[in-house]
Image 1: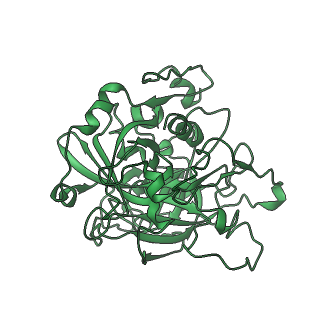
Image 2: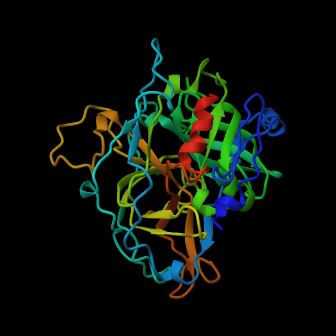
Length: 403
């Protein structure tokens, strides 16, 4: 029986919205009132933020075929590729909220896409092969759109304070990893606070931070830490502690992409804080989606790029059509692969920093037979389908509908 069907009967709801549930819809957990009430229990000081521990990336043991084989011919995602444009910061006329108009259902033929992944998965964590990548520190002012959509996510789990990364994807909505919102054992994080444009001095002057009032996460991750569903969305408060308005009015927001084959050129972002990084700058990685692996049999698969980002980068976005703040030059190759919808309409989030794989004892540094695939990063696929009620489009739509 498919995994999502076995989970189909559990759903936590939050007033005043009531969600129906049946065997074909899977399950989404919505932050209940008691968890939402705990989001304002703590006042975060700059010292608290600086001392927050980087939330470790998930490290998932790969066994059997997961360790030695990847999907050489990726299955075509169910449904056509979808793009929903984002928006720069607004001041007077507020554009339509995400989830409403503006969806581009591309209806492209199979001839326009390759469904082959780029190579075999590493056979051991030391030798690779890994997907090629380049990394650099993001340059320029963080408050300039679209750089402004990236930020640090602070939260508490148990008695400890942690930090992740996240991206603004709606006027009052941010996207991050599921393990930055829940312990994966049935509990939500508390004291969640998002600071876009966080820099070496702390929260950005004139921007500040936002608390959250609601959120949604796939039940598959919330209840059992299913890596292939490690994403979540959060609804921010209608005003921040410095900026008196919705977060998207200050930062703008990214668009989002569903059902894109796993062979895209992506740009990845995050605030890594584990060695050798210090968590004070945004790191930017350019790579290609290299292969797919089904880490928890059934349901979705995860996709992998080359990346050496560390703890603290969890939840940072993977983007199609990442754009420079200035205007784009004319497209030179007329290619969907480098620029799926034109940089002037991007960027589009298509994944989040989730996990690495490992072999055997999962120790570091890697040896020839054991350790972590240390130059690899995984993200769940971002899909939109009628057959899986826990896919990214279903989760994010709940936040869009209630922002």
